[in-house]
Image (cartoon, rainbow, N blue to C red; front, top):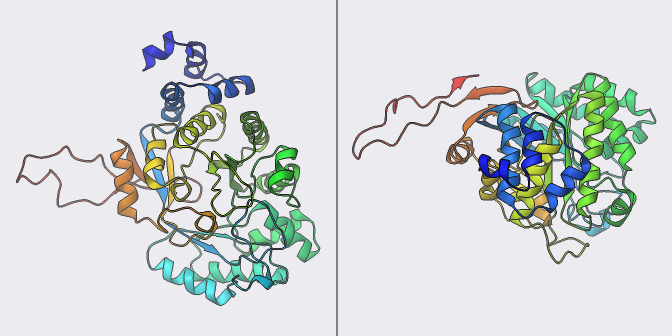
Length: 388
């Protein structure tokens, strides 16, 4: 494939990527429009191997969506409910602590907590939740809240965002989630999420968090009404902020699920579109080290294939997820550690358990070669991973 790239229509791109040179927005658009999916994937693999070698990671975590009551009515959202709907939910701090306690017994290292913009929960609810969870285990990493949730919480507190972020960090917040980025282009944002925070507000919350010395992930929701040029514009703004702060530790492209949404889409993201978007994201976002194939949005099999198109992470065990499930995702609610290790090994890569910041916790040894029938494989009695 490499020799074909050198000779083919992407030869100039191969030279630039191999030399570590940054591609332009025009280059990214050209790659998104390229019909040769495998060639684009091969370019992404050059970047991925340079950054992480032959490793692919996952995290042992649990999702908790603390409420789906929300004051917004984003057109694409199947998750949010109003009080009048009668089928919403909200968890008390005690209920969340109970879920966390059960998850800790299973060996999680991270809680990933997001929810709707609840109309009546007070500021103290969020602070108390973080403190109670940290009191369970000070080493448990709390990755909580999207940028729009932070803006909502700041309005509740009647305090500026920097002050609220500082107080939440003091209470135990370790990282911000990347949700809510959607597509940054104003016209697209108006069409799918009218009333939500602007792109500038989203980026500024993360900028403020990064300037405090903290980290976050970021996302892109693709495959609805946006154009390919809109995707590139979104990636450009993320790359620009990462040049400025260096605070993003991972990027998570999210496919739009139209089944239970108010935005009709006749051609939702195909497998080829997803793999091409993954690959181009890996090539263009040269300053964000990790690219996650979010299995609950893609399905495990396609996420596994994405590991050969630039992705180096499958996300986590998750256990409980409402947002994509309510949008129509048919994937299971959770994956076990063993299932994620197997998926990575089947892709020909070395499994790594990571923490919230994509730092390795455990590295599994290379899988042994198949043995002759009736012969136990070498080291069969020792299947434990080695320390990172």
